[in-house]
Image 1 (tube, rainbow, N blue to C red):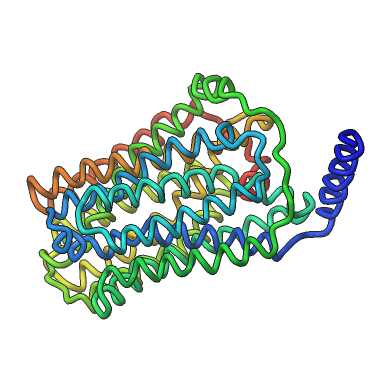
Image 2 (image 1 turned 90 degrees about the vertical axis):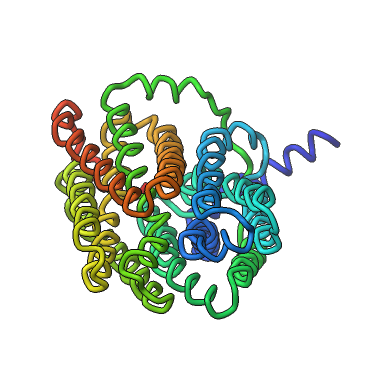
Length: 414
């Protein structure tokens, strides 16, 4: 009886895998919704920080640690997810991670103190980090190899849309309906996503036995260490400035909430188009894309420091800041894949997720200390210096990190 059941189960699994010869686009789209919901929730505090801090009864810098909590936990979850969920159907794992988005957003919506808010963001960090660590591997099992680039492009559309819409819509709705309403809306997006995923995701039995030894071997490679170090420096500078951009716009050029919403929309739209430029530059050199993005952000930071009192100058600088940042993710991601051994690309991707989350956390921490101690100009100054130093490091040390440019297409797909 047991042998018969096992044989039936294996036959069913084989049939499910064979069915992947035809692209499961509905399932891939459900991953797009998952990415959109998680990234939207991650970015919301940047547009709601001031009213959140006032309502919870803490400083803006302290409230900004809601970003830190998500990033720190996300870094750990990204590395540990495959090991912790070993043996569990990946469909169930995806459902569980989307459920964390729902619970996190609902808790944030009812939070009356900082500990509750931080706990909600910890749950989001688990969902975000773990989801990102396995989304590419899941997509590989939903479509044939020839359709993977299209599948990943569709999934990353969720990131682009969230980047463009989360901050400006969050700021607008937060002003109109209150910041708690925005988090309830985030929870509702999670519910809709979960329903879709439960309807279309097929059974995806766990594969393999993850080994953390690969991560340590990758960290020991100087070329990979340079990529990860550059991510920590440049992205921490970027997120230090981005996390506290609303207080800066309120205090220095003294923009209204409506105007800030438009400026954040310009930032998001700039980032959307910056992705395309980053892809074009990366086709020739991923390091060049990173250098361009880092130096451009440093230039925009300097513009805010010296001309930020002008509403027009601030708006233009923040919009171009978003455009510059758009070139960084594709540049860093492709650079890392090009210098990592092809058979260890997935483990390298896990390290990239962790490095990004560490960078976000450190940016929020330093940013919070600086904004409380020196005001918003202090945090913009840090963002300017960090991105400049990071760009110079890549420019000066990058020659020792040759790229396998021929891997560009595969890297972009991942």
